[in-house]
Length: 88
Image (cartoon, rainbow, N blue to C red):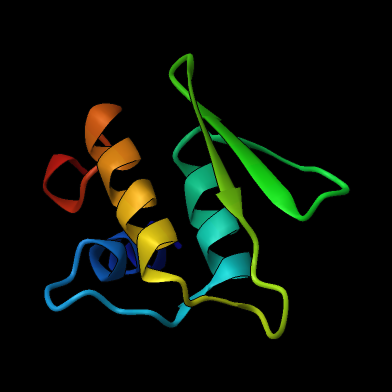
């Protein structure tokens, strides 16, 4: 199963940037690598990895993280906690 999670993280770091990342699969991959994810009533996801936190806006329609700004924030956050495809 970890191969699928690594492939999903590679998609987050892909160039050109993709905008069709399945939210549920992303949650499963991040939790596999030790993240804690809490979803608020305001449709925001609070992600905690290695004592660092990030808040993302969730998709309103559909199930894909399609906002490129949110993908960029996620990419920078994962780099800051050293969770990149190269480090796995």
